[in-house]
Image 1 (tube, rainbow, N blue to C red):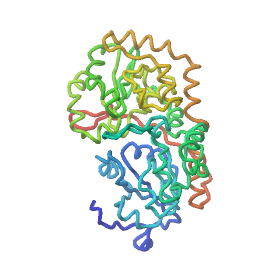
Image 2: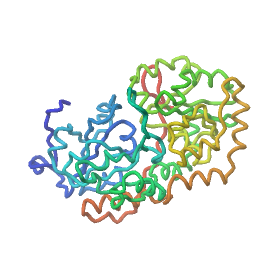
Image 3: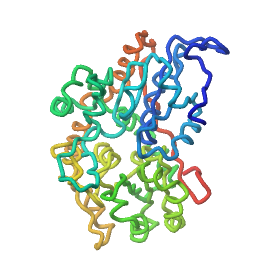
Image 4: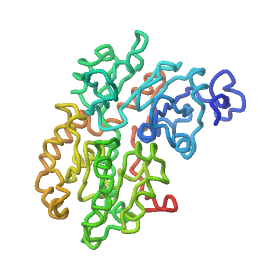
Length: 412
């Protein structure tokens, strides 16, 4: 789609032209990158079934990780407009799971995290000047306040403790802060009854254990530190006893390209490792998993909070906010010794996580467990000045997974 193309639709000055179902409100879903897009895909179904609402998608040109974003939006099948049109059209609400360029929109803005909540430090750029303290990602003052005005009308945070972080780093945004919980984790919890179906989809029969290997992006991630991690895991674990599934951060896929990432792991795929696509599958794998090998990424934390024993193949302490939920996981979870046999380490990791530990990690993730759908929908309809539907707000169950292969995607 050309950035100068004008897409017709039931919005703007020509809204009535060609429209079959006249809507009362139009909502703009602002997708900054693939990770943010997958989080919005969890939340937007709370609106999309309402016939009074038209949801429109756009890609915001403010991220380093925009690779593959146009294809993702195309596969979603939603009505998509170029950014040049989005910033020239009034909407009743804009929703984003990241920050950047949102001040250009003509709509009240609701933002929410695209991971497990603020806990990582913004990457330090290269340069000749002296190092300085790094802000926490997700609480960047120069994104929340632009031109002397707070950008979001509702700034959703998962946990009450994040209000203290906001008070420290951007107190101007406190009046619009909403403790809304974590829709992704609520969805994981509500989908646990499908664990047996997910395990069947991954081919995990009785007597086998499922290991999820997950990596965030960057040089200090598990994949950055050990690019051959999937080969190591596949080589050490017996296929009769273990099944291995891998979830790499969407940033890895978007920077390097799907073909390249898949080709890097051709040998692992031949040896039975199932490589999940960046959009979906990792949630099903977390619910199905018996072990997680991860790093300081959100997927690792979700696994520990869900009740899965975690072992850290890498952990970048310098990139984690001290005192955050992620730093607490780093203090609890055992570290993988890659020079020692892997299977005994996985068995030993189970002893590090009693139910009380998993429960404590859950309390660090959300202050309102099970209520994210209710709170988010209430805030969205409040900003639209529209009455909520009578039906309860519910998140959709986690779907069955698909995996990557040399020939594209296939059922897991």
